Length: 239
Image (cartoon, rainbow, N blue to C red; front, side, top):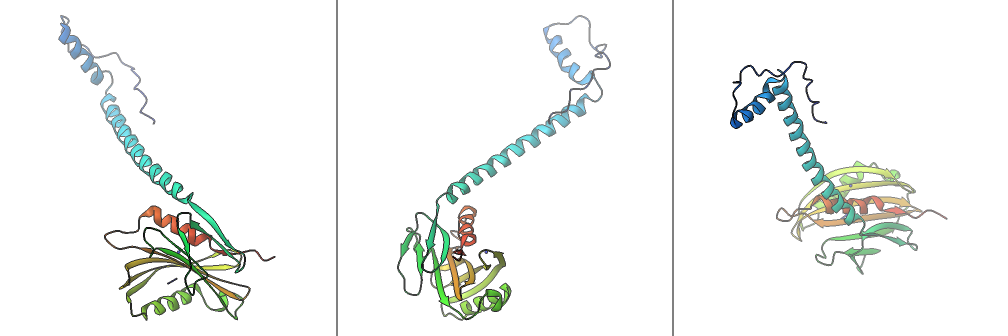
């Protein structure tokens, strides 16, 4: 397998309307006076108070939203800091990998990293000689994606395969990126992030595979981590 402030206090242009109150006041009457003053000092005071409450509610909602956003962002940044640079000088490519993932040997892969807790989550790179000088000579990103997904569908273990997104970016050359989902008899539903480029008449393919089953779906922070791996894949500068 292979993308505010509060509303300004009203200006008291007219004196408080105290004519409604008795001149002989007890302690309870003083409390009533204070209450009535809030609503009789200015005809717009009631609407001002309501508007102030609305601003306060909006401020609280904004604070709660931003607080959750900042926590998610802090978590994502912490995970991204756990990425480390891997460079293969012999085959001429580089990428970021999670520092906790283990490098293993596997036939057919130039390099393979596996998550220790779930080894089916992996990152692999395959390098093969080709005759074309660039990936554009082979076809458009969509053309390559169609070829890719059709190859997956032909596998006996594949129940269903679906392309999620197709894109391209500039690196040392042009890099195609793909995201797709596979429902397989081997490991259930998987999310795959793939990248491909051609350099020095070699085809470089990256596959980032992670489980995405309904009972344990791929979370947003892990997805961001894997996308960073995807976007970091590139050829080494020619010397």
